[in-house]
Length: 168
Image 1 (tube, rainbow, N blue to C red):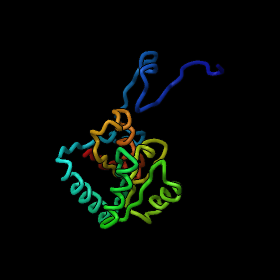
Image 2 (cartoon, one colour):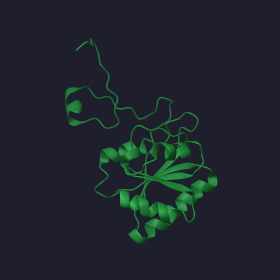
Image 3 (cartoon, rainbow, N blue to C red):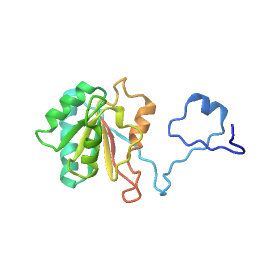
Image 4 (cartoon, rainbow, N blue to C red):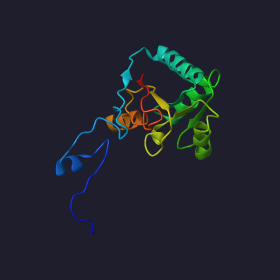
């Protein structure tokens, strides 16, 4: 009630109420002047998808580029993490992960190459120089809003204002 004058709401995923009651201005660049990330979509057979994911993670680890792999369910996150650990330095981060803060810090400190996670990391956390892959991006667990938020993890820092967002 104390706000007077013009108010500005900034959201990548405004709800219907906000869209209908406010004037909308679309911004296609980050504050650092670079464009927002545009996901690359690769359609593949389900069995082949894991091999593409493995290749993507390996190439990022070898290049020293941190990554997040979003998966639709906790169970799948745990399975994918267990499999990828055979080749890649990754950890799992879901709502069931007891040491979330330590796992996130390990990625930030580059002690691991990437995180396999659910939508728990789609908002509220920023990693410098991160790339993103969404595995089973067509799963009903991923709404258009959540995919927009996930893609928004890429290119947030001026030190690396671009990056890769892959939807498998």
